[in-house]
Structures are given as C-alpha cells and as structure tokens.
Length: 143
Image (cartoon, rainbow, N blue to C red; front, side, top):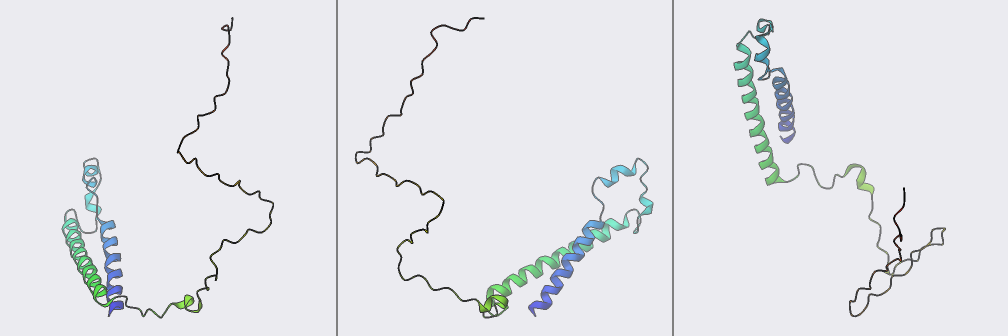
C-alpha cells in the first residue's frame, strides 16, 4: 500500500513540475504590448491561466494531503521495510574493542614528536611578554 502511495506521490510531483513550468510568469504580460503575440498560445489568450492555475491548485492539494497521510502512516507503523534487511551491510560485523584502554605507543617514523607540555604555574601568574630591544634611529633620515 505504501508503495502505491509513493508511486502516486512521484507522479503528482512530476505533473506539478510540468504544469508550473508551462505557466507564464507575471512579467510575460508586459511583453505583449511590444508585439508579443498572445494568440500563439495553446489554450488561447486567457484560457490557459484559469485551467493551469486550477490544475496546479488541485495537484498541490493532492500532494499536500498525500504527504500528510504518508507521514501519519509512517509515524504510526514506523519504517515500512523490515529492520533486518540491511542489503549489502547485513554481512558486516562490528570489530571487538581492545582489551586494555592504555594508549598505544606510535611506531618509529621519520615524523618528529611534539615536545611534552609543561604544567601551568600553581599561582596562575602569567609571565611578562619578552620585549625585544629595538632602538629608534637617533636622527631622521635626510633627503
């Protein structure tokens, strides 16, 4: 039953996309004053707006109601597919955790290790920043 509703859902969505793309925009009427012919439309000069607008509204209502109904159905029954059906992932096993939680020493490599961090001062004093000795020039440069 859920599959049937999903098929209708996709068909209604596709029909809505087609109908919306076939409609003319609000700025399309501005071009008709400069020689754009409205007589070349399939449904006539004004007939397309009412037909397409109503059809879009009906499809949008069906889409909304179907979305609401499928959401309520899934909320009550849960996932429609069985949880044991994992497809390709059904053969995967979870690796066992290591027995000890001690950190493993890294293997010897060419990458240097970071220096050990020092403990902060006990009295939370912040050392003064080092000031580099910069001397200002005694005389301004002459041109």
